[in-house]
Length: 382
Image (cartoon, rainbow, N blue to C red):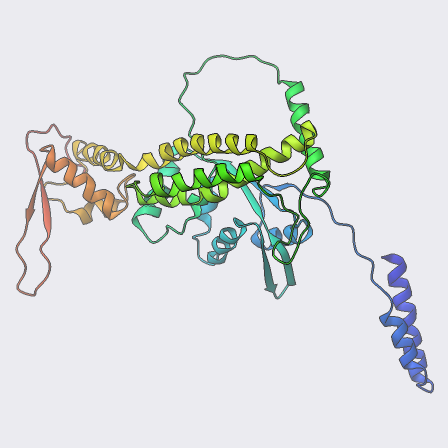
């Protein structure tokens, strides 16, 4: 770059000198300046980022068309940040990044034009169940269900295990074997492993299922759509399972590529990778149901929260749903959760609803909830 800048400055200096003289030969010098090719700066190969703005992520993707991993310890916190004022466009960007095969153009005053040939971002992280519940309630009860959570298909909700002391050294052999696979995949020649070359329809090299493997996928996909999705009552789980038509071949491809670089096989995706992908999908479905199942007892959870406030004297006799909502207590922020809690407690005899008649001005009747006087309650603070 230093040599290029020096040559460019020298040619521009000759242009100025020639212009001050006769002006002849300027076109020839201009052609010389136009033929001066600017060297391309070296680009760092990046595999992950932990904290980045959407603008910087775009630059990373421009230089890394194979995609990048975004690793966040608090995953729901990242997703919730996209709802903040001024960041509405970030959610749309991440939704498009899930496809992994689209180009994207951004134009900013300071950064100029950035063209991303392939928007492909993987996302990994964890979150406490409470924060996941809050996000699920928003997605189900509001207009926030844009399918973002359904795109996080490798959901895992681990079983609770009692704490016990462990003092174990890391398995160095297993770690080194995994890292070796990563290194080989980063340098692999896909065509040499049996991939078809990019064409008018696919911008990257791609693998196909073998005929036998294709039959396995067709049978699996038919069962997914005609049995599991069609007979699923929960709409959000139906939406999640509908994304598995991408999860299955993605997992099969990953498993196949690992076999290629680790065991030296080549050719199309085989039946073994397909069967393992089907087992993975079944495993993931169980964990997804467990995550979404956190909403199944949302009414009971809200009822427990409301009953606790009643026992502590934090609500007066004859309170309204609006009184509850105004406090924004945990599990009692959404209208649907409050209604579910009130219905639950009314059924258990904790409260009784009294609806006032419509006023002469035509206002809607208000439901006031009388607290069962037999309940033990602390004196109200005010």
